[in-house]
Image 1 (cartoon, each protein chain N blue to C red):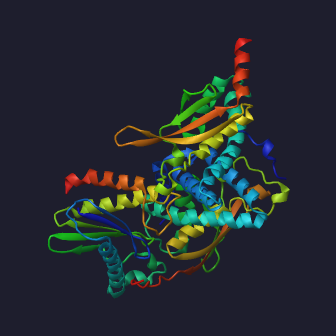
Image 2: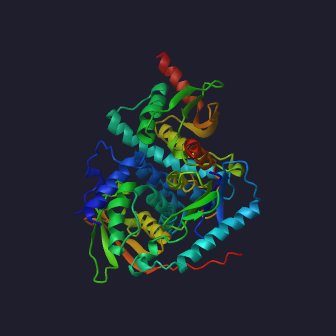
Length: 147
Length: 186
Length: 188
């Protein structure tokens, strides 16, 4: 896996972590990429022909954005929460999707612990929590051998 | 989703959580309320502050609820009320509530709390009759639901601290919050 | 007729709630205090004040329930009561009691993983703040209302473990009359 990104519910990048040093993107590049992803995901949800869930009274709760982009040699996998947060990662095509999916969900759990319970963190702002960083690293270390 | 299913989900969710003494919670909350009464001049401002703090907690707590309870999107508002009463309250407060008093539109109901850990050791003096002691919980529910695009009103209508037999929260669905497409170039 | 709270059973409560809810409440309290002080240095004082109030009540509660109305008058027994009984009842495990090296008036209670600060990452511009000030307030409240006048403050200690962890120490500084009284009791 190369990088983890987290977008808040307004589509702004609030967190990113590189797991390999090969990645050469500037901070602005990343912000732009993350916003673009949010935009693409929103458009995809709107033009999607699959419309059955909208007929139900609470259909708006179903998340309908992009969950996977497959490309030559890499993929982007996204986990979107019911509250509009997006946890997505860029990984090589050989990295098992199931493990990546589980990783993203665990990052969500760790987010609810070390970011949301931190009184010094304002919601929707960039994440600067040391304990969260460490927890994400630990999660990555536990799966990197499996990729 | 059946009531039984939610009761079980609630118990499972609570069993996985780290625990802390309910007394510590009650004492901390009590001390906080006392501090607010000292800082603010009017009881009504304390009520507003408690609800606001609850709201701030709710907008964060909902993510933990979704991440750790395994509960998916609700089918309708009846579902939502049952999830709150049986799973969410259990997972965090270790209590459950009964959902009763539905109106004909199924947009308003009453949550009957059998127990409220925040009330431990509390007695409201007559001079504080206007204080909505447990209003934090109402704020949590309102904040949590707003994060999943539902606007609701939520407030205590009966309170054992005021001499009623039970504590009850009136929950009413107001509207779905439409997501606005934010301009990405800002 | 409303039953008075005094008539209610003082049950040996083993009631529990989730740590998460407590952590959210505590975080919100810290934010409230942060927004209601003029300088961030005063945050600790505000948290401390809220803690002291809890401490007064904790003493009554635990003394009545766990010690059947016996009050400690000896210094070490009282400190042991605070670091063991109180700590366990409130925070789930006992704290380590240490004697201060520099002064006979000082004692310390160390907690390797204080649950209050488990999820809190303090940013660099607030590095002088310790949310454990709340625990220090509780300790001070307990000791003050048990007639052991003192001041308690919280400090972070970087442990040299790998990875480095932080433990919280509550430093208790007793008023000199406490130590003098203790000496009198010892000699009698």
